[in-house]
Length: 121
Image (cartoon, rainbow, N blue to C red):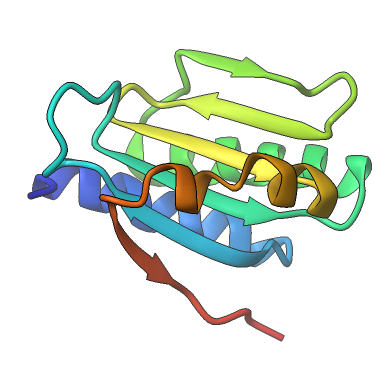
């Protein structure tokens, strides 16, 4: 079960994604799976590399302002085909469509509880 602080962090990450039109958002709760690197993944799709960079910036700003937390690492911003943001208990994945389909994290972690969020228009 995800703890309250992690749940708040996930909410702020999702807010940052939705503010910049991240789509196909999925929260993968990994807390019931033993020996995982984090409690949850938050995954979304970006339309382009610049959109992925904008999403990462929005997530970082929202989480910093509203949850007083910064990522311990951010990787993939240069090409922005797959951006990963490590918040220790939560890892954010921002994919371009082809990369998301190729890596298919939702099915790779099939034991996780997946929550799909509707896109905001």
